[in-house]
Amino acid sequence: MIVTGELAGPEGPNERQSAVSVVGLIMGSDSDWPTMRAAAEALDEFEVPYEVEVVSAHRTPIKMIDYGRAAADRGLKVIIAGAGGAAALPGMVASVTPLPVIGVPVPLKHLDGMDSLLSIVQMPAGVPVATVSIGNARNAGLLAVRILAAADRTLLDRMSAYQADLEQLVAEKDAALRA
Ligand code: RP5
Image 1 (cartoon, helix red, strand yellow):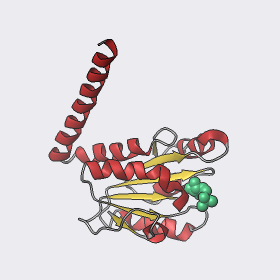
Image 2 (spheres, rainbow, N blue to C red):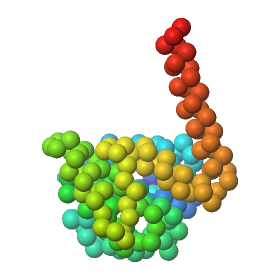
Image 3 (spheres, rainbow, N blue to C red):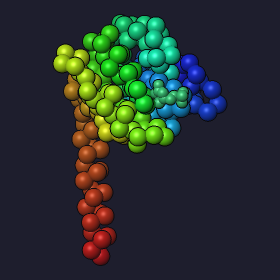
Image 4 (tube, protein in one colour):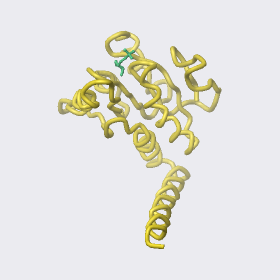
């Protein structure tokens, strides 16, 4: 992964140069990282190169627009955007990029993440954001893998293997329950 901005410190993910990033993993604040790291872990599992950056719709609006406008030309294929509260980031980024945007509603102290969910999911027609469930950044990472896998046979096979593993795990737990 390539880490930039406020997350490049000791508390954030380790900086590591890799292949050119195809997923942009952005979030409104470094405080979103404990939730958003699950997306990074899913991308790591599938060896998908990505970058991580703090981009705030309200605190750094110009940076957000610049990021969204440049994303496709920089080679990104999918953007995962997490935010909490008045979570404008995923929708605003989707409005300035033709790339698929996956929104992660980050739960904060109040309202159990319902505010984040509704802010992200209620997009007007014409500007889609694929919204995962509250706090479910892992699914955002997996959905990004599936989007990329549609044009990548190797990744598609890995996703099929992952699904087979899930099935096997459930079968084992079921057997253990009845043992
Ligand atoms: C949102 O405000 C961020 O996505 C974060 O979830 C929330 C709180 O940010 P901090 O005050 O913790 O930086 O924009």
